[in-house]
Length: 172
Image 1 (cartoon, rainbow, N blue to C red):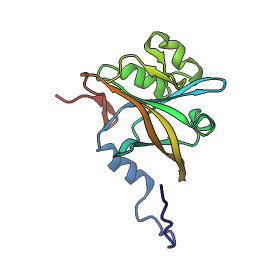
Image 2: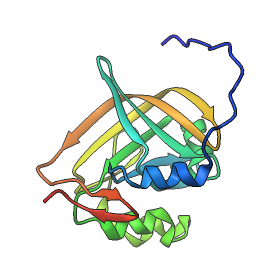
Image 3: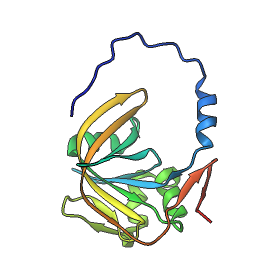
Image 4: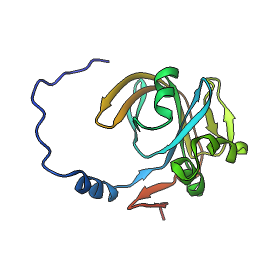
């Protein structure tokens, strides 16, 4: 991968953060659990900042807040799994989104996970999943933008869980 460094001064923002956040609430995104097998246990969080980049080679990106418990483990392990939740998984999305402390997230849903060859935990019943190897990490503001090659993927016929305007939903 090549990086193009742009040599221009950073302009002052023309909008405030709250206006930007409000506008972003009007978009819809799949709800995902990003997981990583850390050296001292499993880590995971709910994320909507996930996108495909290219199919050749299969590459995705995620964005993770630098304050998240997963942050350090992504950098250390250089591997993670994106689990696309199915439409009936709002409870697990809330649990991994902060309703449960990080230490309880996997134990509360112990039956729901399987272990991949990479060591990462994967949901048994996800709409889709992507086990990945990190190829690049960039710090952007408060987040890490993580680019990764997909090593394994799977999908089911289940519709994905969506998030928009502060609510979980599905296509109808």
